[in-house]
Length: 445
View 1 (cartoon, rainbow, N blue to C red):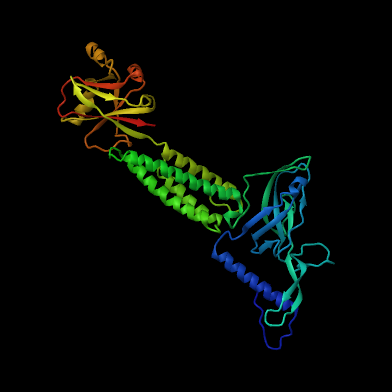
View 2: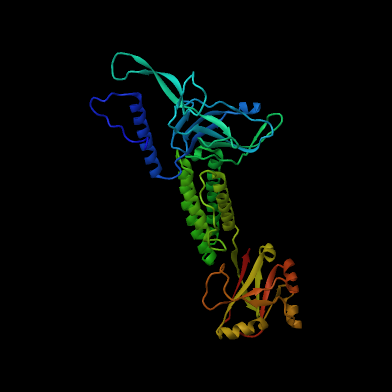
């Protein structure tokens, strides 16, 4: 039979303490069911402070804590509920979580009185002077009330009859009673502000978004001449995405209360959208949200966001290198930045008034590419210079131009070495090609 049904108050009822106790159980159960149905993960700490002074003595104590236990019981230490007695760790303790524990509800006596034997009582008795607020005459009554009777227990203690919240992970308790905590540990929370680790992670994510927005906006402004291609459009879409999530993260961080699962929802959406700009184009598989292991839930997310944003700022960029009008069939390209030769892939795109198949087949034999200083020597002795190879498609970093055919310059050939100490590149076309158009691009990767 359920112990949580509503009391029927009828006329002439001989009232006993059990009636009020049953009424309390009914309303506690009612509120807890509404809480459970309103959403998942409604338990954890809203605030938690460990007594740092007792740590030097090898003891763990709670200075203040508030939140909701996994069984739905709200608590507030020490304002409403007495703080549990400190736990004295023995030397040699390694990799042990420490828990705030509350005896579960039972049909046995639930109140611990001063003359009671210690057991699994859920409440401890205390007195309260309560004022009568219904009269103008000052009066008060001494009431006996119950505060939650918490204990602090270790991971290897028997906790089957307790509702528990993990408060810390002890890496080691040394011989001199010095306690080392896992600084990356995050307890179950109903408010991100209760953990400096989680709050700092959210702030770091927002700062990374801010920095990438500045990088991308500067890059888009620098290429506003319209010579950019797919990469420039991608930069614009990336900036649009980052601006949206920057403001969202700023809002979330400013909330007085933010549930970790709510933060996880928004961060998982950010990871998913950033995955669209990655090489694989799909989001990596993640384990999902774990309320009892928040650190391992958010750590992979934070790393994915960091790596994805980093890749946005280092994606390949294409620069159009102007070709001077040809003299005697020689085009000249001035390399203002010598580092381009080392760090870039060079692509020569061509178009002419002849069939594409013929141009693809014959052009590598018509062109000679070398440094400005050595191009005439190559022409005189008919040496090939830098070789080129036909690309199967236009590189995505380059803008789309109808009819242009891309050729990549071979950086591994011997003639390429001459360009490393040259002021520019020279391109010679051996025969007259009707309607020839050339574009030289450097793609930084």
